[in-house]
Length: 501
Ligand code: DQQ
Image 1 (tube, rainbow, N blue to C red):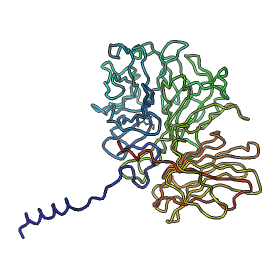
Image 2: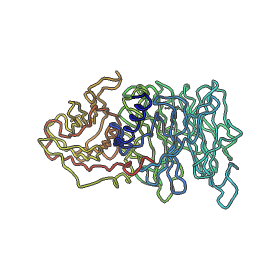
Image 3: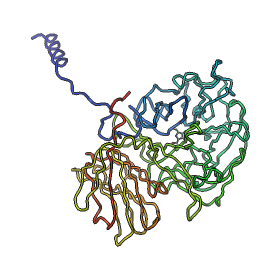
Image 4: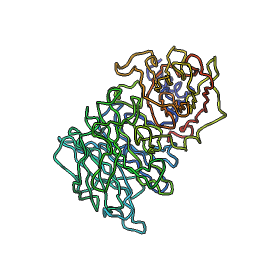
């Protein structure tokens, strides 16, 4: 047989063979409920904004590979904060300038002069850090078609201090002083620098905050927003969120926050400069940013964090894609025994994904664990040292989530993956918690390779990735179930069943 005939036969045979469909978003470690990029690398969430019925999620993205590089803004939109539609890269790297982290807001009255003339004077504005040619500057981009296409402002950069470490602008409109405020970091000086502007294009420095709190690494991705204490609208504090890398309690990167007052010019910390408050006691929660322009009638302050740690973000053992975002979390302030503290809980929309009835984890045997689950634990004080759940699989891997009698909440992922992949990964992470009326409640969002744990309605939160070689498909109590304890869960439906759009 001639070679050409053979080739033709092989081609025909291949064409005729039934093709095994590779279901999109069904890669073994890909979360079903958390946002992940269709392909390639993702880190910080950027430009979170609500506009004309859509939540926009931009994110630090390498369009060309599964490790950090060529940073650009990836983009997705959603009407419910859960089902995301992937859109093309919004802001690409250009002329040797990468698009680092930043924020977006609605310019409702065209104060920038960049919105298209017409009946509706509003448009979307993004403020991002341009990284290249030895420095970091702050820049504008705008969109007049609901975020579908973006134009970089011709007068960029709008702020250039000639610094190598000056980044991550968060913009918001401050109504009492009727101006825009921009929150940035002078990363290696451990300072937040605030700027003010009437038109988003010309900025003047307002004040500096810091050093304060944790300063063991560079400061990144700041945010500043008001929240009422215990839900009382007459008792308002401002939260200044500043991420740090390295120097977080579990090693590597993590988020800290300050609580205080803000008059439109200066942030005043209510705690001593030596007080450090951490947003999360796990190891994988970084670069948080909150949504802009959520309607007043909704009134929620919602943020998202990147579920990873710079110690190993580039080596996570996933394929095709790398990086996950947290479930959007609603923020509040609670006056507790030690002062005013941040509380976080998953957006209520998540409950719409609960499917089927609740399943109770029985006392003395394991239960089948679905790939994604919303788990509720209620543990009374008693004669036990450690209580909680074990998630395990046929490969002998396990991750433990629970509380000790001290009490502290913990996630133990030391035996969570058989194959070692990074020295900084296997560990037990713990955070102090308290008894409330003699009980501790935990809500655990399990999503294939993600664990988000909310203790006592989000007084303490722990976020950790896990990378089993086979799915964790069993759940059981660690040791004896304490008297009067209860663990039950709902399976969560995949948000990608209809679309990897
Ligand atoms: N990631 C971005 C920076 C930011 C850092 C670069 C935080 O803008 O400071 O990808 O993860």
